[in-house]
Amino acid sequence: MNSVVKIPFADLLERLKLNEIAVFHNKLSIFELQLMKERKSEREKIPVRIEAYSVFLIEEGEFRLFIDYIPHTISKHSFLILSEKNVIQLISASEDLRGYNILIEPIYLRGLLKDQLVHTTSRMHSLIRDPSIKLDREDFEILIKYIRILILNISRKNNFYQSKIIDNEIINFILEVWNFRMQNESNITEEDKKKDHREVLVIEFVRLLIDNGKREREVAFYADKLNVSPVYLSRSIKHFIGMPAIKLINNFALSDAKLLLQHPGISIKEIAEEMNFSDQASFSKFFKKQTGMSPIK
Image (tube, rainbow, N blue to C red; front, side):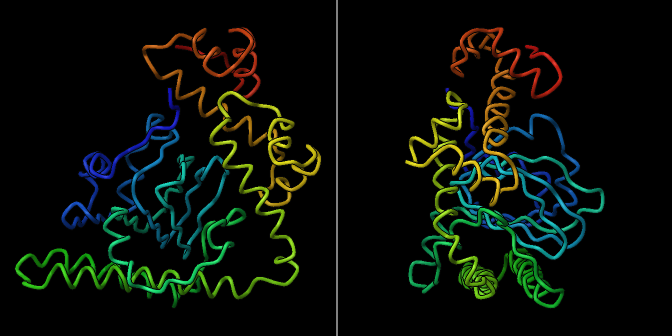
């Protein structure tokens, strides 16, 4: 059983239909975060992998979420890009949260960008320490203007060239986003660059955790796979993520456990077996230690 819920792009749009403010041929959809935060429930806070490229623009307030089981806070005048490979889980949103979420169908986006020269670096792909980029007010407004123009042109159904105009606007928006990201990369110090090998180690650890975290909860397991000592791995994770390795591993396992507990067709005993606990009592002890309460079906 796969504990991460995968949501196809079409299904995602159907779930969020009531909150969308603009949709273009089921390829692109724009939502106001102020509307979306009103639909909070525990069910919506489970780990998900959505088949979409997702861009968040935060005008006011902040929201907290896990990205690949690592906690992050996205604040005012910041933008965040997530791909179809990321596992995300909402934690909370401030009452004054305001901004936009843009969802783009992956095949459509790749088709638009196939002829574009988009420069990327290994650091851009990792974004382990801070996946969001904070801009000054003027630069942030540039991105907001793109979104408002997109919304306007999506509403112009009688425009004979609507599709081409929107295609070009999406390309321009993505290139502008990458421009700001590259500018941010240029501010990285030489000291930061020397630490890249440790950052790569953390990235590989997170990938291993996503594949094995449901059944493997010992730091030594991951250290062995990565050919480093448990101490070195733990220090690297603490440095880049800000929490001990075992805490991140437990967060991952706890998310899996909560999701499995919502499944009506599986018992607590079966969950313990699924997650490689020695018995039901061991699973219950782990769950209570992490949450302060016993697991309940």
